[in-house]
Amino acid sequence: MLPESIELQIVTPERHVLQETVQSVEIPGKEGYLGILPGHAPLITELGIGILAYRKGTENHFVTVIHGYAEVLPDRVIVLAELSERAEEIDVERSRAAHDRAQAELAKAGVGGDQWQREKLALDRALVRMQAAARTGATAGGSHQ
Image (cartoon, rainbow, N blue to C red):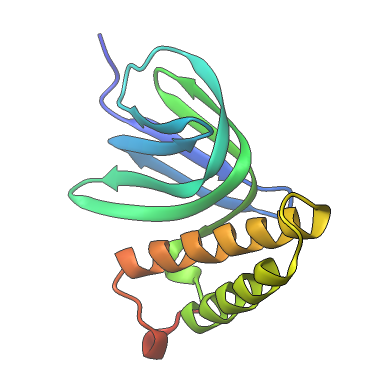
């Protein structure tokens, strides 16, 4: 008999971001998004940069995930991310400023160099943070944190 829910845990080196019992999870894998329902076959996947979405009851929730790994079991998903934060924790103004700064620095950096890689990561991180915050209805004037 298949389980009816999944225990979702999200952990970074700095903190325990989330522990919830949920009905479904969508994970930003390195090669694309994976949909996880109760009873999913066991797997381990590398994470990319994106928004992890999960459904609890009738509500959808969003969490940024930046690199790391996820272990999927039939009744549990454990995400070990380098960086992660709940969408409602995101300061939209700060993310927008980081996005603008990274974009300007990326334009100055030589393509493919170390500086370019750092600025590309900063740009991707700021962009995913703004997208996650937008899913909660946050705006520049209504920053969270």
